[in-house]
Structure formats: C-alpha cells, structure tokens
Amino acid sequence: MKRIYSLSGLVVFLLTLMTSPGFGQSTKRILKRMLDAGGGKKVYESILDLTMTGSVEMAQQGIQGTLTMYKKEPDKRRVDLDTLGMVIVQAYDGQTAWWTNPQTGNVEEMSEQDTLSMKRQSLPLVAYEKTVLASGGERRTRKIRNHIHL
Image (cartoon, rainbow, N blue to C red; front, side):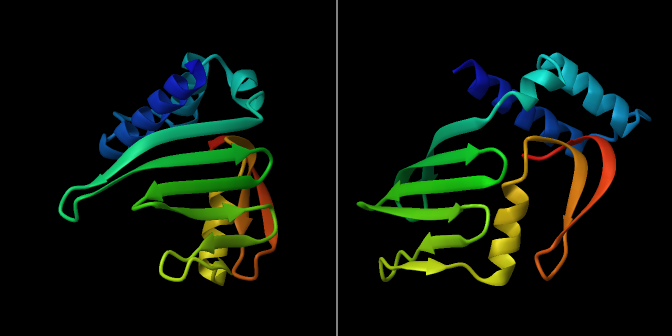
C-alpha cells in the first residue's frame, strides 16, 4: 500500500514538472531529489513487481469500471479494464503484445506501433541506460543517469 502511495506521489510530481518551468534547475538535480525523497534509487530498483488499481468513469457514456495495471520487471506489463460486464486486457510479455478486442472478444496481437508503445511502457521504473526502441523493435542503449520510466 505504501508503494502505491509513493508511486502515486511520483506520478503527481512528474506531472507537476511537465507543467512548471523548473526555475533553472537541471534535470539531473530534480530527478536526484525526487529519487532521494522516495527513499533513494535502491528503493526504486528493489521494486520487482507492481500492481496499481483505480476506477474509471466515462460520465458522458454512463460507463464505469475498474482498471488494474500489473508490471513485472524487467519488461512485462498487463492492463485489465473491467467494464460493461467484460474484461478488456492489454499485455506485453517481453516479446509479444496482445489485447482482447472488446467487439469480438477475441485475443489479438497488437499492431507494430502499439507493440513499440507497450515495450516503452514496460521498461524498468528506474533505468540508468536510456533504451531507444528503433522502428524495427531492436533496442539501442546510451548511458543516461537517473532516467525514470513510468
């Protein structure tokens, strides 16, 4: 439960960073302070799996549901949306991205673009090498300190 609150705080902090000018602080300094405030990089590196839950409401359509996101290091991710009596699943197992088509109920492999997006979202929470996914899906890395993925 404490990790969920910490990660929620981290998300709010990152959103705040995106909307504020930063007042001349370097990215390195901001990320280091954020990591330190959350317990340090060792705390984030020790998180091997993560489950986040929440509720979803689309008021204009009158639709409500629950959303559960599972993440397992180093590169697995699953999102379940439970609404209208069905569960819509999007998942990435480290190699293949798939989803449950809500219109047919069939499990289908995702498009190349959606697969690349799922790969990016499945990267470690704290990465000290920025992983760049090229259009062909191959991974290229370059060293960047304190690079954070959520």
